Image (cartoon, rainbow, N blue to C red; front, top):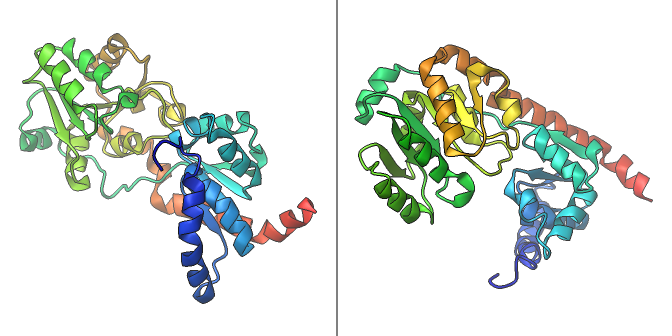
Length: 316
């Protein structure tokens, strides 16, 4: 709703969903309502859970907590939803810590890293993949919306200091013109490509072809692009934000660097000088399969349902 700062987003969502859920519930008496983002989904889920008498789960992914949870108009809605939810999911341990710092009950927050499709994202012949993309020499890939938060300008400036390195940026958004102008200003038109949004199948080829995936985000929960790069056998160069330390636990997975062009250039150069084996890089994310993720989520939701009556009693 324009000009309201998000104040009525959750209310509008509740009004839109209530008649639909009434109809669904008559034929399918569901056991849980899960809000897949904290705002406005999670706030709405709490009210809808009360209406239908079922437990509520809310998932925190990143900006849904870091942004909406700290804005004057919506912050208290987010925090109240966290206090009221029967269970919460965080995409990283760092996100869980942030939620606890906001006053949400830690005993109800479970950190479950998103799964990655190890069949879609896998290593291949890197040299051959580069040829198919029309790239020669070292290739760096950035994946993310073209918005200031993602820090693509930092990586562009880093590549300006790396002779012979090509940078491809997959994603689109309002920052495209600013980045296009920066590329022209730095004289990098022959080495930096703005790909726009590309299909997942094509993205998998770029990830496997790249020598490193560099993303200079100001903040993240735990970026899918990190896991997809590692599954493709490609190390990452990222700042120490969100769940980065859960992903880059050893040098073979990449480098954690400061959000400056100089630090990113150094991190990329370090990897190019001594590239890790793709199989070793991929091994760092093999615990994060969709199958393992599904099993963890099944156990979590099963626990929510089995303890819902007990928790309701404890509120009396």
